[in-house]
Image (cartoon, rainbow, N blue to C red; front, side):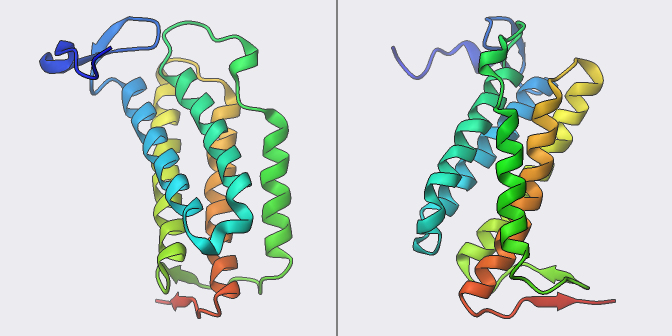
Length: 178
């Protein structure tokens, strides 16, 4: 099968069930943001500084692929394709473990200091965009609540991971104050 079909040359694309929609359709927008997030998570996993987290980051990618599949589908999806609700607890456990070794935060933090740290912040921002896109879609067509929960928790995880990496790499977080 060829990668190009020329069917999208008119500004339309197909949902997973075959329905043609404009490329600016809320489902396509949300799916695109999730797809971009999956790529950024892969980018984070490639840093040697995240070697011990690669398996967890790969699991995040798998759960996000499930989200993208559901969002891109125009049919009701069987529960077996939904993201794993137990994985939310895994994310929370990872956040709690990292936060237990971090000082409480009292200021905004400016992204930077190391490529892996900056990558976490970029992924977090893309995650929040995906979350907004899915929320917009949910206001028009019901989206399983697990997707919003996963994106919300994941953005928190990425923020805490940026702080954890800064600690591990002995990088001072740049605080922003008014």
